Image (cartoon, rainbow, N blue to C red; front, side):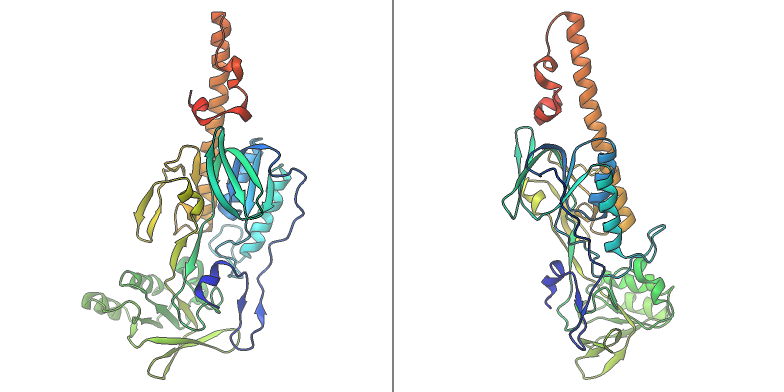
Amino acid sequence: MTNDELSTRSTATSPADGSPIEPSPVPDFPLQDSPMQNEHWDVIIIGGGVAGLSAALILARARRSVLVLDAHEPRNRFAPHMHGVLSRDGYSPLDLVADGYREVRAVDGVIENARVLRTRRIDGGFEVETDTGARATARRLIVATGTRDRLPDIPGLADAWGRGVVACPYCDGYEAAGRAIGVLAGSVAGLHKAHMLRSYSANITVFTALAGPIPETDRLVLEERGVRFEHCAVTHVVTDGDSVTGLGLADGTTTPIDVVFAEPAPVALDEPLRQLGAERTETPFGSWTAVDAFGRTSVEGVWAVGNSSSPAALVPIAAGSGATAALALNGEFVAVDVAAATARVDAARAGGSSDADRGLGDATAFSLSAERR
């Protein structure tokens, strides 16, 4: 399996016998009766992970018409469990998505399995087109497509991704307590992960070949904390079939390791935002879509949440960003409705007409410029 396949496969493969290791599948719920292209939605949400579903739940409960288009590829689908999520510690991330599906649909949100290929601005909002050629339009757009993780090209690493090869100390450090931990550093900055993991185990080895020369101060401080270094290149991951047991090295030796903390490069799945011309900003993870505190992008009417706005967001943070954007977005809708009603009242008092009398109050006919007025 190549590293790029991490973005498309929903299973990992055991390198010992080739048998698939299946995570809990996202249930294939029947599509709902409301066809996606027969309605001008209040909001279309591209992406049905925790961020997108959190936004959908808030907006649907606010009685907004919501369409979620989900390609069924959440970033954490390779992991059998997630951690640090209040009331769901140890829960399957795909089961959490399935729960979200049921909750959103219970309040009349619509979810369809679809991959969005194109987004564009139109009069009245935005249009999206899927890989089947179906089109849908909405007043507002939330992008929750997230990221994928690009792992170093080391045989066996991708096969054990989420099952012995992990990335986040907050997500998997507790389960690694007292075990032999390998830190596959991809950069000097990545050495910080070894410091984070030191509170979980005294048996930590940092593999540095991918990171290049290590500054002496960084090396001495880690060694002072009991961390070992291995400078020989890692050639493959060693397993006993289901579990990681070590890392094979270019000199022919094997370092015994129980769990590997890698440094994957996050790759933004941000084509919808790029197509709309959203401004970007430089982050420690590379160029990313710029948003304000509520998830607004530079494109009026377009929001980005979850890993689409913050590549380091854990599950609770991603869910919170979706809810935050939904609250602010619904506040805009309320303000538009209040402004239209105020215009009608003012016009009635003056005995004249207003934009509201000529249809400005019709939410499905709004253009963004009309809503600004």
